[in-house]
Image (cartoon, rainbow, N blue to C red):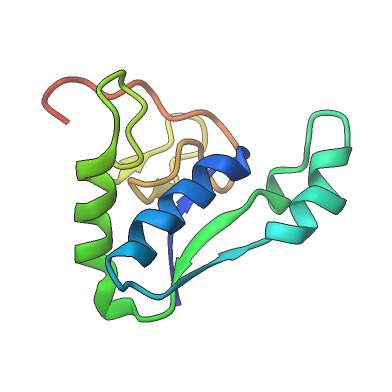
Length: 114
């Protein structure tokens, strides 16, 4: 199981899941229910319970990332980007995460080159 995309908005996660499933890539959403029951009901929401799109087969990672990158809209709301290092805590964060998994600092804006 490989995590590929995390976001507080379950609709974005669901949309990404639909894209992958349409191409025959098996995936599931971790924290889909707990986010709505626990994390989504608390003031400030707990990032620990944010929904996370996961692949059933790690071998599908490259293809899944390619599909999500291709489907990203042109307004700068990309699902993907290169892996990055959190400026606040120094942790390495996967490119599909919009905020640091450790300290929840938001990812800096992507530049055109990325």
